[in-house]
Length: 355
Ligand SMILES: [Zn+2]
Image (cartoon, rainbow, N blue to C red; front, side, top):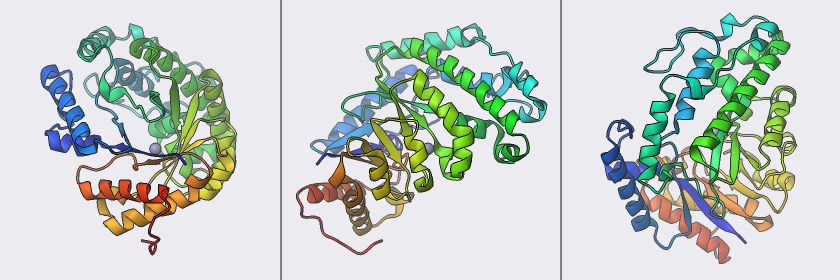
């Protein structure tokens, strides 16, 4: 039996350090570095001896990410971008009415973008203080590997045009396909730049497919799956992140694998997920929407045991916090989670009523 816990404790730790999201590395690098060091100490202090794998998220993005989203939202689409916020000043979708218009969009090389060299220098200065690797960017939850999140093409399109994409899937499917292909090209370019900036220290990446829960199987197969497959071909060790209910898509998600690990959203039938992905895949079930914040210790215990019953007997499991452990998470919640895992492994888990 192989069970670990992967908790994104960044907000939780930040609260104890007094680190606020307003403190940007670029504004005050000394304070930023001191805070990161303090975060690391706190993690060691609180979780010494626990089988816990820290997950730190978005402390600082390499410059390609910020500029990339500006390009996607503005420059690429030939519209004005607010240089400070990076926000597009007009809605891109309404300016693209034909497949030809979408296909004709220019993809600028972000290395040529104003501000890129400056941002890159700041990023590298900061990284140098941590022997070249900024700790917040390392997600070492799988056997010491380093995973990198990539927004799936569907995520990205949804982010750009919102719910309108679903209407367009019905009224202008060819336009939607063209848009997806274009987003895919931008993505591949950004990823290459990201690799140059961050180096080759990571060994796997994962496709953040948060929008899956909103798609029917037919829609997934028609619009998302071809692009996900393309991505999996370009980046062979691609894993899959799903944060909502995806029972209805399991077979189709499996179709762009094979995966080493799959994150499965709260509410999904976990026993079926195990069936689809097999015994060798590390399943990463998400604990639940309010798990960290609102569950009583009894509920935390019961839910943890329930998930393990559904998944752990037939393969490796990594219990995953639901994106983040909010800053209000009680230490008791975390300790109860670890205790439930230990009891389950020892065959001594108390079976309780469902929360
Ligand atoms: Zn997600």
